[in-house]
Length: 260
Image (cartoon, rainbow, N blue to C red; front, side):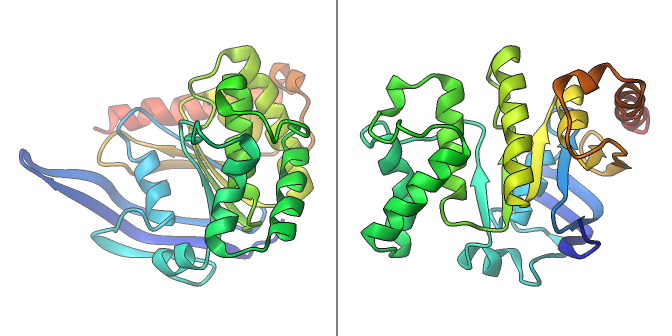
């Protein structure tokens, strides 16, 4: 991984105006995400994790500070399709097959049918869903639907993948399996990944960098560069190194609450 930032945020603030008064979602967030990083954002509910991810994606507009994605504004990066985005729910259209769901953004972008077919086949293989292109979402398990959602985000081959708690609604066994698959996918594609989670073990297992956020207004209370190797079997979670990082994350979350 290089030290070449592809996402930079400087002194980012975001305040939502509501009928009940202003809501301060983010405050003074400064962060660099380098090419090839796997960065997890963790913090209590309402701390601004998803809001920050949406700022990167150009789906929310900060009220102060600067943010750039691949040297562009987030809005320019969105129009340039510089990233894929995976939401908490798979969001697959039930009337389209899995292949049809993955093709949809490619159709909108004007790829010809041969290119669409090649890309659909390639990303289905990446997420271990080869042969499921003619199935409908309701014929797949929740974990398989989420993998199809990831495939759709990968289909136009953006260098950045933004993931908003994609496995949060899944049971622990399925979640562990998808965590393993996501690491394998990251190793094969070398994409830069921003990943929102509430799970300390998930954040530590997946990430090269863990960003710990405080309660609202969301601030970065700690940034932890992981010393774990890139290849991580699940049983690495039993090692002293893993447990030490998990303790630091937990301490950062606790400190953030105490600073309120």
